[in-house]
Length: 408
Image (cartoon, rainbow, N blue to C red):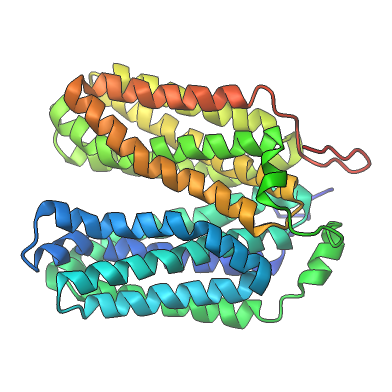
């Protein structure tokens, strides 16, 4: 299907308006989280607890988010994406505001756990809604635009969060609640009248019933997407964030400013690649770019293991950014193809894989770095990406071509 004139310049092009709304919501949520993130451990320490206890406040959010994803998937099937999305944002917003008013460590811990449940509701429902409103030939591009909103919000948030935290440890929680209020209002107002049935008719998916997790798991393409999302969580969201700062200072003997340079470079490369990658995934197929993304992630891990200087370190970070972008759009498009745009449980399972990787990766890499070396830790991360790449070799192409439907 041809793109309208000017769509190469406009990332939304002919995409449904709901994609722009969901992208704006994603930006607001990520912006707020980036603002509050620097304050969370410091605020916890203000109650006189240990470093372990302060870290637990961060971990409980991730743990509850992971554990409650299946519940969020069932709620999407029963209540619909829009209600679960708005409710999830509301839960995170209210719990964050109350967390900023906490008078004890236990209150802060419990409220962050409640926020993790709301985050699972938002993440699963927003992604499920995105897949539902776009046509099969738009899934890659829509995912690229949507993830760019998250990425830009995540980049901008810490820039405001650092100075705000220096002024007050409670203020970031209030601002975070405010950004979520904006996101919830945007979602409620602009998505309330979304004609889902009309979108499904236009996309040719009106007859699709929600796909169960068991049905999705019987697809080798879905399994490949899940395994690669686990590897993304391990390498990109886990090891890149946790091990790289230590590697720069202790392994490369460079100043901490190089950590920031590497992370910014990785994020910029990812942002530049996301939307073009989404277009290519829609026009040329999911499988080649899923394989390419896994190969870039593998190469990034090996490069980091061999890095003995700043230039090679920056090359490794750029490779991580490229691999993350390619995997982000291709795996999401595969999931959408397999479930026909409908199915809260498979979306939840896909999201859980990334969360599990982000939780397990830093722990394993940290143990290996302590017991052996940073090189071994990065090689182990590369091995996980290598195993994920292997799963792509047996998967079929899932992109539907007009007049020649390809199934998983």
